[in-house]
Length: 129
Image (cartoon, rainbow, N blue to C red; front, side, top):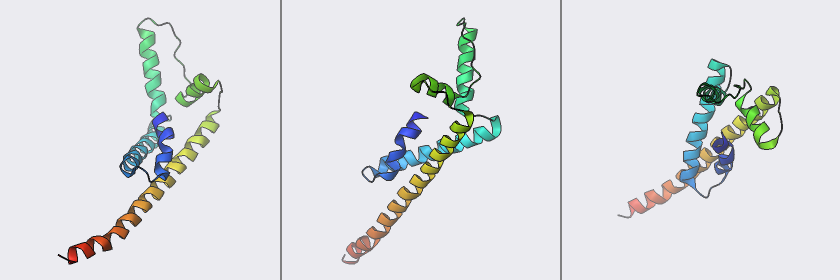
């Protein structure tokens, strides 16, 4: 999740095209997994995974109660000492999904335009042979 959010600027930079493409593939896969898990499980896959880890720790003798709160909410509480509402988490994740989609479109368009600009040069070099 942190890699998805922290990597978003890569979609708008032209400096490292291979890294941008790799991140775009990762972001699309993460967003698809997130949306699919919300549809199938009713929650983010990270929440389900986190709960399973808490339950495994509790079974091994750690007498820590298993939280039933969303992963995103627990993360915000741990890092920022804030407790966002579920609606707030959904709105932020939808905004980040929109930014991801926009970034993928922008970076794809840039590489498409760059490839098209290179085609006449490559044809001209090949014609001289």
